Amino acid sequence: RAELVGEVDQHLVVCVHCRVEVDTIRRTILIYRHEERVELPVALNAKLQQALEQAYRAGCRGEPEPGEA
Image (cartoon, rainbow, N blue to C red):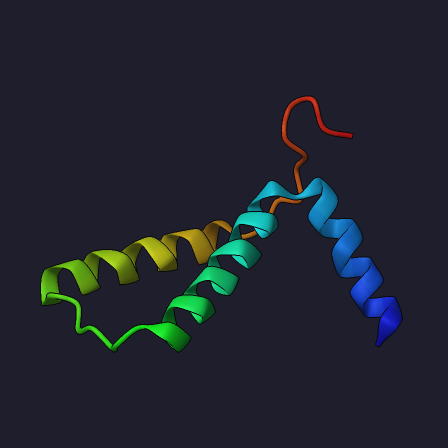
């Protein structure tokens, strides 16, 4: 398990896409724990689902940001 954690940490150093994903998930969990549940308007929910599906299909390319190692 510790080896896997180390591999994930190393990947996050070079992959900005995954760093954003992890940060977003962490923030979402914090918000969910401390806020009331809010229902999104149908149109916004559909737009969000579409954006998430596009991001999922694009996948992680593991490309470092310019200037990163």
